[in-house]
Amino acid sequence: MTRHCCRYLLDTSVYPNEPEPLKELREVSASHPSYWMGTAPDAGQLMGILLKLINAKRTIEIGVFTGYSLLLTALTIPEDGKIIAIDVDREAYEMGFPIIKKASVEHKVNFVKSEALQALDDLMADLDNEGSFDFAFVDADKVNYLNYHERLMKLIKVGGLVVYDNTLWRGTVAMPEDAVGEKYKGGRKLLLEFNNLLANDARVQICHASIGDGMTICRRLH
Ligand code: SAH
Ligand code: CA
Image 1: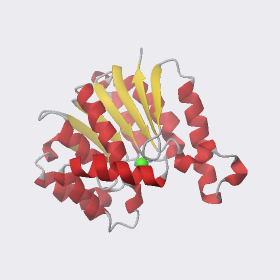
Image 2 (image 1 turned 120 degrees about the vertical axis):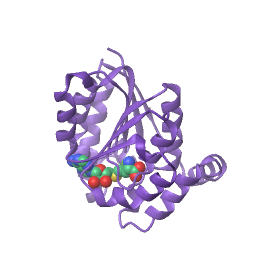
Image 3 (image 1 turned 180 degrees about the horizontal axis):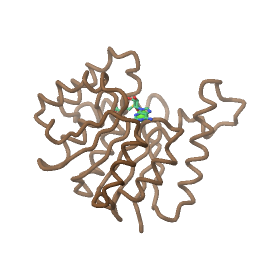
Image 4 (image 1 turned 180 degrees about the vertical axis):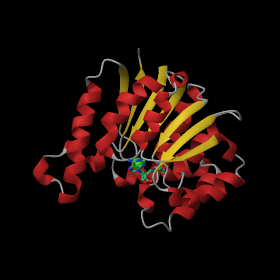
């Protein structure tokens, strides 16, 4: 997408419809040194629709940061919905938490400060959790996307969704390697491998959407 198109759709369709608490959280996060990690608001809008369409109630989030996608999920799921929100960084989460609280949705959030693989293994240790989640959003270390996928294919119910963020890696997955800046090469390689795996995974129906930094939506088939 060109930069002009991106600006246009943010100004026309996204910002005028962005709930006030999310706007506020975005503004608060802007002072964080890694502010660019927050979910793109246009991608967030897509996530909001997906959550509503499947009536998501129990969700998992891997990679919370200051909580943009988390708050979006909390505002979208029903009053008795629950999000297991996993991140190694509690400080960033605490930066956005007052806004989550002010929006009166903190009771839907179960923040787990942990390495995500460990947290998923802990969830799987309780057999009642198998196939019990409606939705997961994965937005943490790309090196583990494959590992997260294997576990989520057990935790998410058939018909449920797993959404992976940053799957276009600034468009570098579509570029020849020598045209890619040094700092993107490692991530590009991981995402190339991951994208190929998803494209050939018979367990899921996928849509690789060119929104934000690329979002791959997977629907568990069996
Ligand atoms: N979804 C967030 C952005 C997440 S940024 C938003 O909308 O703002 C990525 C986050 O993943 C960071 O906060 C980082 O601490 C976390 N992370 C990275 N590796 C992780 C791991 N192995 N386990 C748990 N969290 C991890
Ligand atoms: Ca991201």
